[in-house]
Image 1 (cartoon, rainbow, N blue to C red):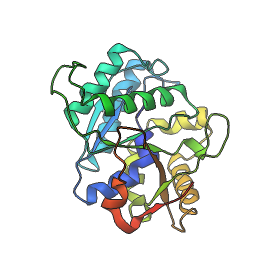
Image 2: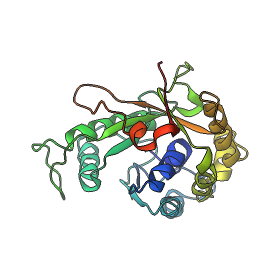
Image 3: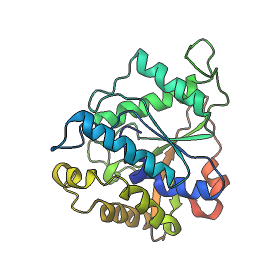
Image 4: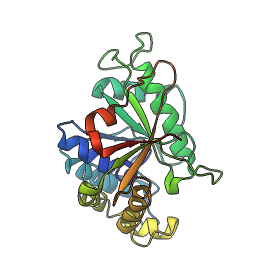
Length: 245
């Protein structure tokens, strides 16, 4: 994900369900969220937000990783490609969640492309990185719903996989509550007066698609060379609803 709290907003409930099924959880961000305050400088807010992100991951006994890019400057360039591939090789995930290819923020879109690329090139020996070597197979890649469920042109994006997260909504709220520094920022920049309630509202709207109290939506990357099986459906069973869109 691009920034601390992005994963908690978009896929925290599904991560909680996977954790309950015995999965090991890793949450990675491209930046520490250095622009996420109008009162604190970039280094101070970055330090706070790294701690908040690690605390949120710990709710699921998970690990937090930060690649230390800067907000607004996430670049699809050589060094960042190498860093993201190295992280995938280190973690060796079975599945990955990423921002959708089209979202309201360029940071999200670039991070999406980096994640897609890293999932594929983690198994390519001639792309050299420090640390662990090539990792196969290619992880299953899911794109989370864009913010407010619409792309940068305002067009509704329909999820093809919807996960019923009703029973873990309070866990998701606990994770999001760890990002306390963002309450004022989200009020000022995004017009979210109560960001946890905003998350619950998003969940209710997605839940309406499947008749659930709360849900999270995804689209699976099904391009050539990527896994075609729906791991979420296989792992979470009746909690997952596959839709024709």
